[in-house]
Image (cartoon, rainbow, N blue to C red; front, side, top):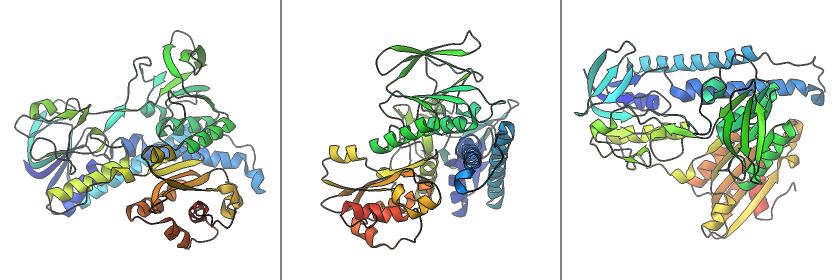
Length: 463
């Protein structure tokens, strides 16, 4: 059986590649060993946001009195919350099935592996294998939870993010290792549910890739919510012999501190799925554990490509989707623009939310820029005050010579919905005064973008 394109993996890179290729007239097959939609749709982005929304509704109900509304004591139905999350993921996966059917994309169920003669061997769950041929092959196999030697996951008491989405009961206590987006979001969710949460981070700040001011603000928010935050700390070992886990942590003073928890969640990064997919057989080169590709995702082997978490760049769903489109359009003979990895938005869906793009203040100075900074706190926003959500701020960093936007760092309610304006501003080299003179609707949270730009040029009205 021969196709124009076979895609191995159906996550946000794989399924987007398949659909775009079908739109461009290719005969496409997708190999998938589990649910369509991959980790993001089934075990990551989508179900996590469902859990976080339930936690947000619970938080609203618990603080309804602040809005002049009387509500009986709100309690979480943990199993119903988990069930809702799984239902949302299942619905989205069925949506991918519909899109594949609409675009005449063939699904090959099983494990996909490259052969030495550049074919794809698909082995189903009964062990039966079949060979398929394609003019082009895209690898989009994604990643999995990273295993730390000191915290060996058993899937029950020491878990990864996947198990954290389907626990059969609400744990009384949880220790989360790693405060990136996954660790921070799940720490916030379980804390909102009533679990006693400790968040341990090796770096000096939580959300360590963010601007330092944002990281410090989210740490304050976590502590205010009741999360114990330990930075500059490392889990040395976990004793699993007792009813509660005993976690030995080397704290920021260099001392061993023992914490107890019912469950440990290891959320310290991911590992690319590059094993058992035939890379050695096909002669595909790796670089630092990821597949080596050019600007259009071509490997060193002709007609074989790789996208998403298994190549360089941030391991984000929207990045994988963008890479998929770029890759397929190049295969089809179009002239796509290479992705600018310096202009990728990052979002964390805690409360408050965090969103950013471009350089942090420290990076801008390190790179030799003379900068102007404008900040606008949501305490000065009429919409934020009316919504009872005035925690956080917007921070914009401009090149003082060119007046273009170097970086944008947002923390507050709904800021993940606001960041795209600033991604476009950076892409089109919009100046600070362009942002100031762009009329933003009132009252909205987005007005704070205009005000932050104005603050950088001493033109701010509402501060």
